[in-house]
Image 1 (cartoon, rainbow, N blue to C red):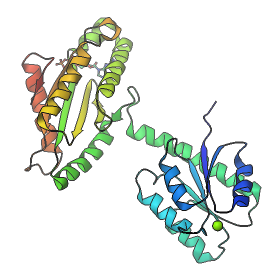
Image 2 (cartoon, helix red, strand yellow; image 1 turned 45 degrees about the vertical axis):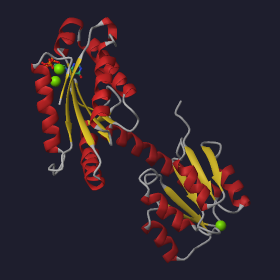
Image 3 (cartoon, rainbow, N blue to C red; image 1 turned 120 degrees about the horizontal axis):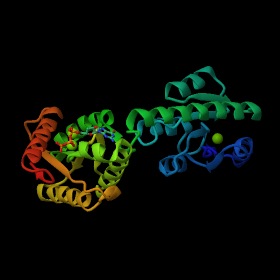
Image 4 (cartoon, rainbow, N blue to C red; image 1 turned 180 degrees about the vertical axis):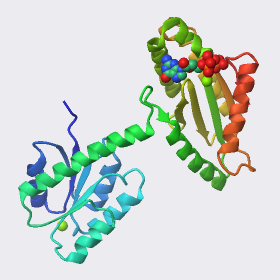
Length: 291
Ligand code: GH3
Ligand code: MG
Ligand code: MG
Ligand code: MG
């Protein structure tokens, strides 16, 4: 059975909150907030709402302002918002759409129509989530894919240059992986890839960006990490994989590391240096790190 989607209802009137809740709580999970500030807080908390029903006229912060703040925050920007409001003027409704709402319902509303519109927007949200997952994640390992990594890496280079902070790239390649497929078959090879990916993820900190960049290759970005710390973290990865023994098979990896330099214009040169270092690690005997 599909997990129920979560709707956050925001209104300063307890009566409206009760009516809207009773409209949709049979089919969906519901949370309520009585102010804009509360809505902003709850929208960032996990599990995040799949849809927000948002009143406009509220004390302190009105719904338009809440909507604009949600849309400008990358953590909440993709949550669809339906205004439910007493403001009936055409320009009020137009404003709602201009600042990013997906729908606009005026009070007094029909409960049947609210339910229908909520259902429609939740279905679209479900499809959107699936598409995002396919676009950003690698299906076999659940790690980010190369496409997402490249996009994020460009942003991280810009941020690191602006803040004069450090950025490291690790290119990781499983050693002699072709032998795993040749000796144990492709299905076992896939399991080994999943276990290696899982271990790399567990050993990395939540701040690190980790992706499967292709076949049996991974890329990790370390943010704001000084030289010795970056090397220690890489040694941790190397050791963790060496002692993993997935499916009772000895697996090792080689790592090429490179650091963002002041002369780097973008990500390409940095990636190339990590790739060259990986080539050296392979040439020098594998199961090792080169910088
Ligand atoms: P090296 O130490 O030089 O990296 O040797 P290698 O055997 O790991 O490198 P090579 O590039 O010769 O072979 C990589 C192998 O990875 C070949 C390919 O069949 C396998 N591979 C790539 N993607 C997948 C996958 O998704 N699943 C499985 N099971 N194998 C894969
Ligand atoms: Mg109100
Ligand atoms: Mg390879
Ligand atoms: Mg390899």
